[in-house]
Length: 69
Image (cartoon, rainbow, N blue to C red):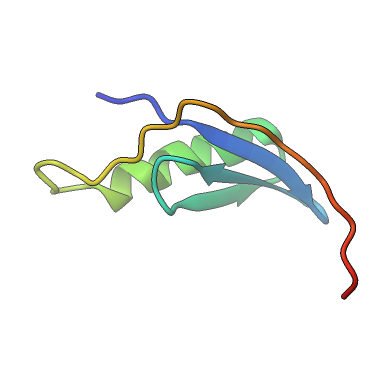
């Protein structure tokens, strides 16, 4: 059993949950639904793998910048 680290953000009418330990994300109509869907998606992503590749996350920060695009 492992713990997952994730961030949640709003994108139009959905909440998006992005796992920081693996390249997996999911979404839902609420924050709770997005996280529950992410938990299931990560479990399915690693299903059947003996020792899955896992990124340990120690510090997370969130920022916002303006760019010319």
